Each structure stands twice: as C-alpha cells, then as structure tokens.
Image (cartoon, rainbow, N blue to C red; front, side, top):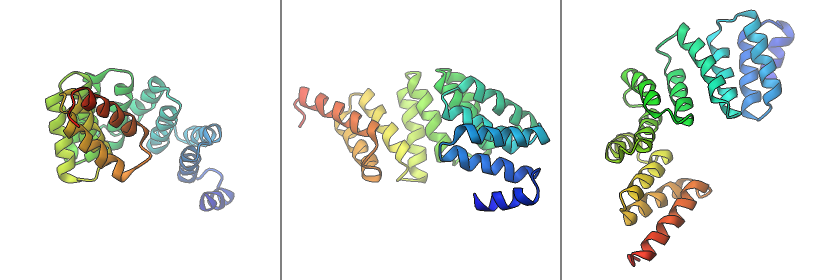
Length: 204
C-alpha cells in the first residue's frame, strides 16, 4: 500500500497504482474506498482491463454477480482469452445457478490452461449441481492428480461421494480437506452429516 501511495503522490494519474491500490483495499474489506480507486482508474482509461477485472471482483465480494459479469464482459471484450476473467465469469454464472453457461466459460479457460486445478474443480462443481455426479468426480480427480492437496477439490469430491451414498469414502475426503484447513466450516458440517448417515446405516 505504501508503494502505491508514494507513486500516486508523484503522479495522481498513475493508472496502475490506482487499480492496484483498489485491489489491496478490496482484499482487506475496504470496499467503498476500493471502488473509488477503480473508478478513478477507469475515468482515465475506460478500457483498462485490470481495473475492469478488479471491479468485477469487487461486485463478487458484495454478492452482486450480475453487476460483476458486466465488468467481466467488458474485460473479455478487450482480451477474450484472459483466463482469470473467464474463470470468474463462470463462477458468477454458477452463483446465479446458471450452471451450463458457467461450464461454457470454464471450458474456454481450460482450452487455454487444461491443468488449472481451480477451474477443473469449478467445472466439477457445476457438473455436480446438474446432477452429473460421475462426470464431476472425473474433474475433481483431474485436479487432485495435479495437486493432491487442493482443498476445494478434496471437499467437492467428498460432496460427490456423499451424493453417491459412499459415506465412508466421503468421510475420508472431508478429513483430507480438514487436515489442510481445520476451520473449513462447510467440510465440518458435511462431515457431521456424513457421520449421521453412517450411524443410520450402522457403518461405523
């Protein structure tokens, strides 16, 4: 933050510093001030891709996914192959329950970077929401073959195994996710649900 302040003291119109200060402010939860810096950057250059992308992330943080997509679309009009923008457009569509459309953007991103564990996991999550659990598992497995400790893939594979009523295996994957982050509330909750199912079936 200090670097950006120094740079802006020298040149208040330094667009890179404006956008990046907004990014840092967004990360620490200073959303109103972050928006001011993104808007300053875009007032200088309405086509500055980094500021458009960061403003989209700003709206994701607020749970305003339609507004986020407007900025991702503007960024993609400048560079249709920017992976992080494709991924977050897909993530926004997923949050809006538009799972098939989300997968279209994940596929575009995976065509560029087929080994991106985050996007592989995200596509698996959308497939699972569509009830295509076996296909979802394939994507979680692909992600875990690249990074066996990728927490989100471990957690989501646990969810898929739960859907398939494979409760012992589901428990294993929730445990693996919790070994990485013991404070993962969703994994703790779903592990508890799985324990109940195992108890009902007398499998423990």
